[in-house]
Length: 357
Image (cartoon, rainbow, N blue to C red; front, top):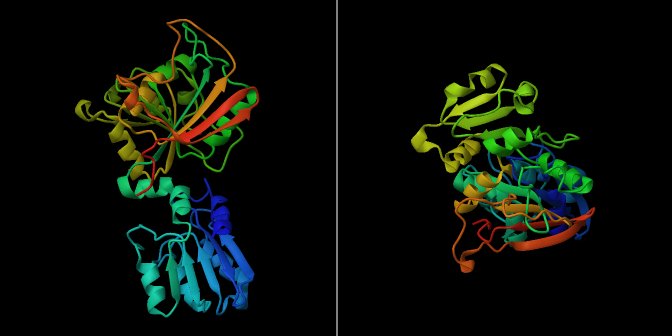
């Protein structure tokens, strides 16, 4: 099963909004006969690749799969049909699939057909692997990643707003790699005005993220890289003042009008869910990150710490918002890792509540 989970992870950023799935076939003697993983959205599922690789050796053997086989016609036929056709005798599944059209149905079909089915092996690992998929199903909201680069004294820019460059070249390369795994990259109005970012993955990654700007006021620059490239790479602006952005629309951007009383981050995240965005990356600024922090909407953190000092009480910090008054209420990340990133340190961790149900 751990090998199947490792295979599943190869589909990261290629299969969303589908889950990552890996499968291994053992023949009747318990020897590896075939393996596979879900490689791209709309393509064959992991079980199909593994069973095809195993061929006749699958007869009377065991299929080990990280997620319950599907039992409905989607972009591909039901995997339960392939399992039954291969005459698999035993199925070992890490976790059931909560997708409404499956939700235990695949397991039930195979058991009814006489297949010996076991569920729950390495379930915690499978849940962790597909946490973004599970959150999207459960809440209708995507998995929200936060990213920032800061100095040793916790600053993201000088007192006059200069931030190029805090992080080193290796850290910036990693950020571009991360962007290429996302469905959307989000910034606030202030970041567009101060930094004029392009927000693309360079070089391109597995996904082409939509560039998103959150601006309640609609006060965005008339000239900037996002607007100039909106016909080449999608741009969405969420605002309560859409009439101010007619020029952006003419240049190819999509402007989503949200009424003043509904202008909330959760409304934007819900719209992301309707678009089937699974992973989104928030790159700033401090006000947007702070608002998401206050709303407990951040799931995963990517922080690059540079061995530099800026100083100054008016220098900018990464997370604004209301914040907390008691240290006991601070957000303590879990599953934290630290690794060198050129001259910097890359800190990666998860919010404590960012655990799939």
